[in-house]
Image (cartoon, rainbow, N blue to C red; front, side, top):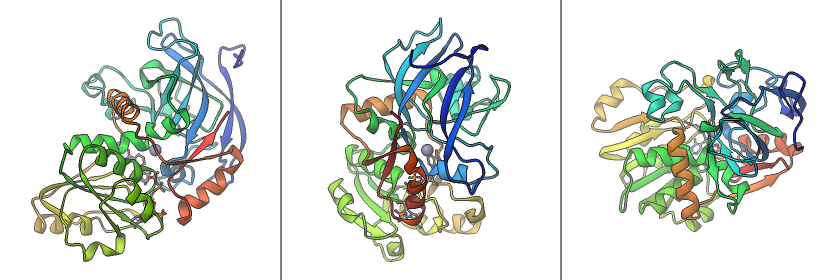
Length: 356
Ligand code: NDP
Ligand code: ZN
């Protein structure tokens, strides 16, 4: 048996938690809710580190619930299934992203936009109150297993490179979704601002969709990587005032304080900008209405991950076209170091924790 069921039916789990916002990660034992009729138990093999994990665990978006076990880029193997599960069997591979449940009945859920559950019942993978299980806190993927409603797990074929699949569950869907929403196609001129975990995936998808892609990074360190990915122009964020090109679409993945209006100015008339990067509260960004009006004719929207159906579509698209993230595998005792690198500009693209 790969897992232990406690007397009360709960599943024994262990992972790595931060105990307060300044803590280092330490081993943490806990239990997960019992496997319901429609739930699956997944043995976690790989977990990506998203910058949202850092914002959350450090309480940068508001006070987190501690102990905090982050991780919403999860790939693993199904080790048990509830009696009514039809999508998975034991031995299958599954991917789990930012959500583990929602009401399933409202218009948003019925349209597979579960991240916008109109009853407010979206249960996020960690740091979220699980209204379907006595409001207990959820714990994420920096752990050995997870119990999830089968609807919220996506099917991963057995020959897929699981360690590269993990980051697709957040970095992949969060960039794929707005590129589709804004109908990016052959010949579109796209710019990606912020060239980290999300930015890299945005570049790869946009290139595959036939767009002419530019990158705005913080410095020149990853210029060669961008060119290897098929980027046609590489700029640093300080260049944006002198850039002559105008774009159909810009995605901002920037996780720090910056001026979004400077990017708006780079859009063509009718162009669209999707904002996905969410800086800490203390660097909260607001777009000035007067600037919006005087730079009119451009559309700005925020985008939050993507629904489950679209996540499966993104995964199938990625596997079909072999679009994978650039990753560095690390051990669980290297999470603190990875966080430090991700906030000091020393990281390259995506760290993935080998949870095996
Ligand atoms: P990463 O840390 O992997 O990447 C961020 C990148 O932005 C880094 O390459 C960093 O450069 C670069 N950067 C930082 N400041 C600037 C700047 N002023 N100008 C240009 N580039 C800059 O983070 P992720 O990709 O994992 O996440 C990015 C953001 O997206 C986070 O805020 C995260 O919370 C958010 N997010 C939002 C989601 C949504 O659904 N809306 C889902 C997932 C994440 P350097 O390499 O030099 O540090
Ligand atoms: Zn994420």
